[in-house]
Length: 254
Figure 1: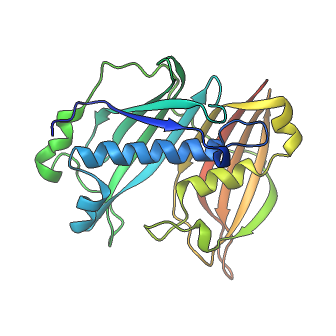
Figure 2: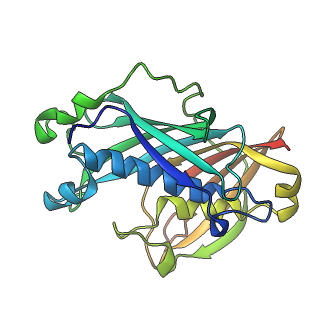
């Protein structure tokens, strides 16, 4: 079967995927985006299963999601996904979230690397599978949101510690990308979500977390509803804290 450059996937906001206000959880939306990326890659011959046979896998490096609103309970919506650019070690993948009429309600940008599962070193995408991924670059479809910020905390406060457990770990053996997102969203009280919604969410993944790690959550207010958050691995004896990922969250009034 021949597939085009853009993949479109139909979804529904199931009742067990929405929060107390009836809006889709951001973490669930994140899972949908990553699943759609996986479907798109698999259909075009560079999905996880085929890569794993050669001891390679995809890892997410950056993600930014910007929503006008979240899908509501039982609402049908679609996710479009496409590859905007391919470089030697990274690829840019974009998303559009649309309502049932096809009107965009949000967009996302992401950066991915393909790594060797043993060495954890990135592979040259231009050499993998004779560079077949280049055939699916779609540079004309718009993704009208800003690219990634440079997130750097200056005077953060440690607001939570958390031991990594079984349910945090994904098939690659490290903390699941979306689990970090869910833990970060839990840093804010329920009353915040009663009056505000997350307009934009950015995350930069830096290192991998594993079972046995204790995560330290550092939080800093930037004003105007913007917060920077850094997750670090607690040090072992005489060691230093290691940064695993950084977030920037933009809240707006409902």
